[in-house]
Length: 331
Image (cartoon, rainbow, N blue to C red; front, side, top):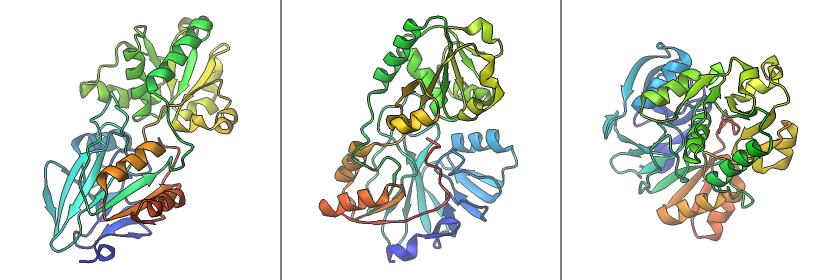
């Protein structure tokens, strides 16, 4: 079977006719395989959904228990129609997975979803999966993106707290994955005071704790005057609401790989940018392709052209998929 007949992009997302399913579809479909729980990959309204147990739980938290008609936990290899499917850790967020597809007389394809090779204390590490075709993201697919050590970014935060002991440090972080990773990194850096949470990230944080992720003492961010000089973590949307005005002269921070772009930090009014990414940067992207050495690379959502060009210079066949509906900021 030709690769283009086995898996190809449609308006709804990547479609596999041999199994009659879509991967991370952008609109409701009869059968969906989901790589992870971020809103630009996991949507409600599908008929059947197959994902890791943690991703299914996260979707239920975000969308309600009736987010789909039927659920199937990805546990080992399974047949979906004429395709053998298995899920492998992606290192991106809790429950995130790469999806391996294989069928008779066809190529082995791995759809990576979003992935990260930097150790992440809140999820299982990325796992290399040999394949004929590797479908990779390119969110930070430009040579300029070389993310620093997250521990060094935590040192910047702790230094700022020491310099401004009377100012609350408000850290913007996405509710799933990034917020909990910042908490875990703070604990690893030796911060033992309570971390205060905006209500919008409380339930997903509780779920991480239920799954055995130790995040220390966590309190709601309901008494601004009593938490001056401490850490408050909130979703990005909170910084555009009256909520942030409750704090007296806070240090506005934001944790994202995009904080490496100074213009983005200025646009958000960020005083303390923390360059912490849950995606591979350029060195990790190229390292991954060098190590896997697939017959072909399919590149999606991000700087596709730059990575395709790198592949050509390194004797790897590659092409852009140009999928739509993905949010580069959901990282």
